[in-house]
Amino acid sequence: MSTRQFVTFSVGGLLAGLDVRNVREINRLPEITPVPRAPAFVRGLVNLRGQTVTVFDLGACLAVGRCLLSEESRNVVLKADAVGLLVDRVGDVVRAEGGEVEPPPANAAEIDAELVEGVVQLPEDLLLILSVPRLLDPARLRAPAQPPSGARS
Image (tube, rainbow, N blue to C red; front, side, top):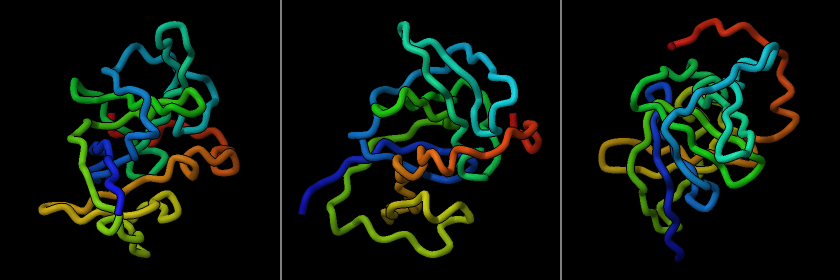
């Protein structure tokens, strides 16, 4: 079986991760320019070495509350679509053998189960492996604009 590696991070009290092959880089938070009338999950735009990157608030995407901006907050920039994901803090890279990645349970920690492609049982926590294609699905992203109510920031 093949070994997979996952970048882990905390968002809204959850431990989540992405396959390292989907991650271009991880940055401290630069200045984010808000986008008027954008959906609640769009935190804004950043200029990353001349490229405009849309920053999604992963907490809002997962419906666990907007990310709390702090010194530990990070922008996880994906390889696809010039998108960054705002997370509360980044953790370690976790390695898992193919057999250790299990299908997600039906009640995957109160988040939209279709966004979770699998789970890995760690010694002290359950790692939710997020699906980048599902997170960035255009049909899912056509949510109406909302005021930033329920913000944790």
